[in-house]
Length: 630
Image (cartoon, rainbow, N blue to C red; front, side, top):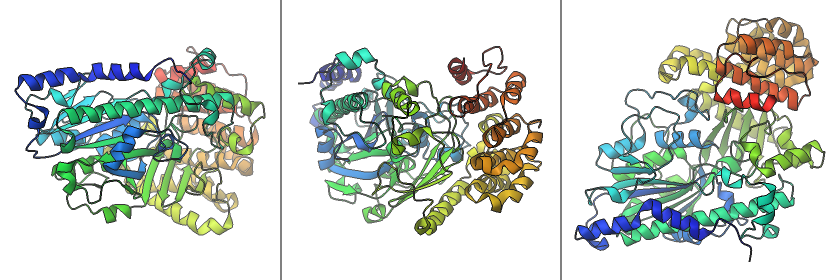
């Protein structure tokens, strides 16, 4: 039998200490109540959310035949509903959790960057949805991760701590909402060294795991997959313990229990990326006997309608009989007057990925049925661009080493190469998104249809990432709706300019020249960004770009230097060093250093002088970049 040094028993014992089950039962007995008496006359349902960190649906056999067995979650499914098309909207925790707790798409609020540089102030009347539950009599507890990108308004939690628990409410008849996050499946659980891999065997046989085609089938990857299967089985036991706890307290049949991943992950190329493995999460909802009438479906069924994190808050409000505020982006998928036939017809999911710690990107995706359209707004940066935390994982660093050695096939190498601005996949036939249909003539109509759908979504929000983060931090986070109102017409212009990258160069050259001459620095930024996608094909723009390396706006200067390096191999160091030594905004410094990493690591421009003395504006994320580049 394979063994692993951090045993399942130890993990479960630790959880029992945290939840304080003995204290719960003692309190009940001292109050003269048996577990059955506590909830003999239920009024409104309770809610428990169990979140496992950093795991997509691919790691549970309930959802994917290659996943780990999870008997306690499967038991939940038999007593409830399995949602096979559930999406976190974002592939990283702070953005996904903010989406979850606000019921709002992050790019429409300015909460799409991980980690936040400044938290966003929600408009008047907006708050985290547990605050509405609390205002309507619910006891709300969170154990214990928050990680919100907004200023917390409305006192969402009665208690949020490592000791928070639904059983601590003084009024035993009070309905409760408890949110429990388990970190045993977090990315950090795969930050082991060579010694650990050699000496700490796994319960799962590494030789028996499935390694998908995007990854090399090396012993390191096999071990990493096996270790993660072990972590999922620990999560399953912890889910089971929570079910047992509710049952022992007499509350299980009064409580809707949700199990889901807080976003996808966590093997290389998932967490932080908008592919299915980054946003497609497991979701099982156990339906309590006493409130089965609020779920329009027989227990044990699978539901293939699309649900997203924006829908979770509205669902709890509907189940609790609380009117849903009109500004929420989501729709309830359980509750009074919610037809499961209608839910099954939902076929669309919207996803987004922006800055992850110090690594910038801007990617949007829309999925409609089996088809997924991905728009890479900065596709000239490879997915595999350095992120310090990510490359702590042995599998990550080995993957990159093998690429540099030329030892990978074309599918495995794609992660480290520039991406096309548009990608189209049939994810049911191609679950690891390896065959891009966007360039094939027979898919042209579908491509246009999906492109239009994404453009509508971005303009309807509107998507605040059409402005660089430096602009948003300076002008939008204290009043995002006011910023939108003041700039409403500019959003369409910025999207149209950015989208010049997806058309043939000879058809857009004059429009690019016009945009490069714009009085709007953000429009010039997007025109240069589009030109970077064309590369050498757009070398005719080099003279104009050369003039823009002396522009007043530092990001216009950056993009001009970056374009000249890509299209004409003009050394960018002088311009970029000047920006870093004179700029006073650390967010601008961070955007510039993201480009430097690509220029050095992937385009071969050497001779950088990057340190704390040569970068004027520094924050914690900038420090990470400096540490890597020194």
